[in-house]
Image 1 (tube, helix red, strand yellow):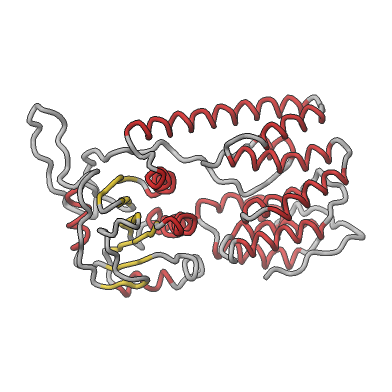
Image 2 (tube, rainbow, N blue to C red):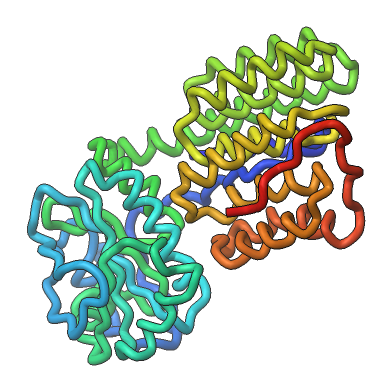
Length: 389
């Protein structure tokens, strides 16, 4: 789980592409309310022995369906116990369903070496689904299995008997059985818990407790950091940064390492600040850390930022993301704006907007606002950023 520390942005003018915390996990589906898209089998009357359960639910064997067309990948074998399957029912006509494709593609990329595969099934004809996959937002970025099921046979095998009535809906299949049914936004956390063997009643409780503890520590760090900034106690802020960097939660640790750069800059230790940035740049293997580093290095905290370092960080972010992440290009646009290259920044932001995931579009507003009026002055005597890829 990623824990965005928004106080960094407001207090130290750090603008980075952090994700957002997810909502509570769903353990088992309840009988849903009616919605368009299907005519679900009505649940049997309550016998008085407990709440009625759908015919297909957690613990049921995964159905096998005859899919008309496979646009990408091969027909999956859900009985293959060596794999964990994320089965998504989606529609090109439903925005949240479309948005689920790149989201789950990222989950697959992170966990493919553990046997995780995503299968996306749309109940529309081939000529409706295929054009969407050729657009910049999806082409070469959604490397998952995609099938078309216009006769809705898969819907009748999966969705109806589980009392699911709308898209997007996700099923996780582990060792041939359904382990979870719910919102695809939660699938990443759930599949990792399933893979690690923590997806049990006790494991789910432990996950919620762990998430609450992380949020509590994050809030405590935010309060302490804000006090240190308000008092301009930079040595105290550096101590907090080191404590954050040692936190067992990767998101908090990452934010602590990035905050060290700004804290050192505010303390007047510019060379130490750049050395810390070099360490992060040299060892980082994830694109979003490099993108945030680039944005940090051209923030207003740096009167004379090193645009060469910032450019290297932004280009490494683009490379690590395999040119698939809009926010990696946005970080390069930050560097170009700081160096006064408005035309190059505009072209880079156009590229970012073409491929950015919808839930990240808000993160581009600051860049677009800067383009439309409040551009920072160019830095004299420093090398300009190269044009966008």
